[in-house]
Length: 238
Image (cartoon, rainbow, N blue to C red; front, side, top):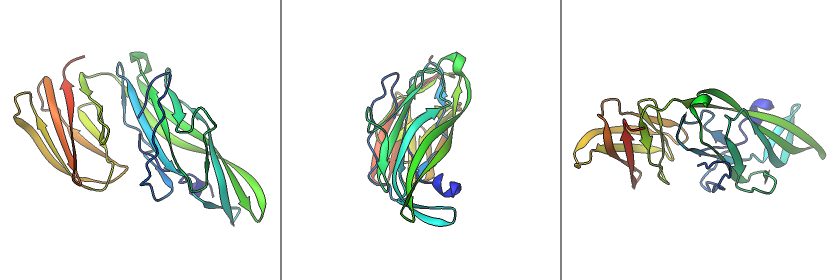
């Protein structure tokens, strides 16, 4: 029962600070579940934002009996680094969703050097289920991990379609769809300094290593399923 309930949400990710901007649910989510359970790293000294997309299942099982989920409520997110906050797309109202409904949760903050470390977050959820005409309330905690790392001078300009962040000497792309991902990196003179092709799997991460790039400003062109975006990064500047 609990294993099935742990897959009742589906997650991807954008964030603010003390006042978290509301996110927009991804209408393309089909299956209940959530992506990812491991969030991209936050970097000390840089604003962090991530959006968790989810879909509530419409049914589950309880003590070997089938039940219908009437609603699910996010009551809390615990384990966040100091200065981080969260908000759902229904805030400031209660974060309650009907069975089968799609929603999202925004996480954000401005981590300091004192926050460097690993964090085990927990999404506290309450499911209202009807089992043989009897209402049952099922509490569920969904684990999510987050790391805050020290700045290494690599910064990424956020873009709306491709959720690109960083982790040590890698650019981390949270894949928005399945398909072939083409990556080209240009320097300030328009010269191609790195290319690569990757298999994109929705909800998983693609790591683009940039350890070979010298200090400077670069433009990363990403192409996937006919959509493309160019994102500016800088390396070696704090």
